[in-house]
Image (tube, rainbow, N blue to C red; front, side, top):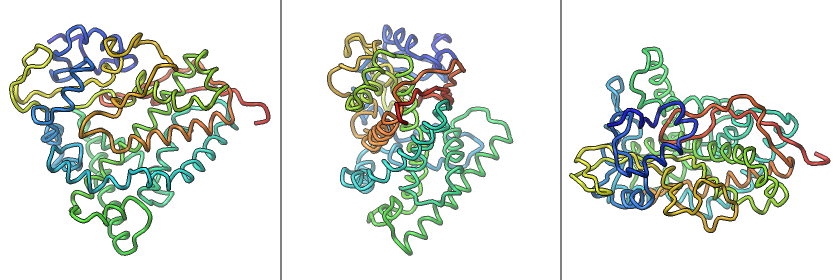
Length: 394
């Protein structure tokens, strides 16, 4: 194993694409951290994601269970299941993310986006992550949970702590923080379930309670897993989009002049700077993949971010191209684990960008450092200082 092939190296987190290009020249190989087997070419990535028999999601919860934690609260969620259990659970919860359900939400999401965009426009120079790209999904996610406003800041802390569970060597103080967060989340979700059971409303918790065949443990696990997923994808998508616009002024000028290009912009950002960078699977039997023998029990990192820059699939893959034909569904996974919230994330990004572009006609970086998330699973700025140029009359 080559120690230079480290997905968590600081320079790789800032820009993983040169390493991905190197990996595509040896498409299945071991990388750090932990000697995972990285799959980097588009066709191999699709093959792994479609083959749930040899590349399983079952057991991932146990793989990420550190010795200081008694149980993984998302271990019984959809992302940790294969058919037939996955099929049963997905059919029971998918109604909350259907087209009609999202249509009912759209006006409320637009109102939130307009409010946040107006605040950003007044400030002009902001950390876009703190001012907009995190606030929008927090507020939207609360439409699903129905929490009181004073609990919104805790949702962000809970999501961060939940994502910290796979950390290998947290300090004793950090371990206690994570444990306290898990206990708070459990109490909050138990109270929500009890409240909606007594008085159903128009929210996800009520939908889950109305889905016959779900156990309360399965409902709790789904709520736990939805919390970080609901933040990460949309927040990173919005931030990555604004960063791409700041770094590609010619394309940005087109979009600011023609807001109807926003859906096309979102699709190319999803390919060029995808929020979801990788997905994990466990190998159930000795398997040959890309001409390489991968042993049973191995952990495979399916590099979505690399597949979406594969030159064999996308001409001039490293070029951001608003005129690229057709959306790619790979940014949200493939096969049975295709992201339930894909259309919700697209809708939030579209409405957020429409609200912004109605008020601003340009964006630039301030020169301050852009800091990146420290995860090989998802990627986006943690801090994005930008300056907006306002439209006349704003």
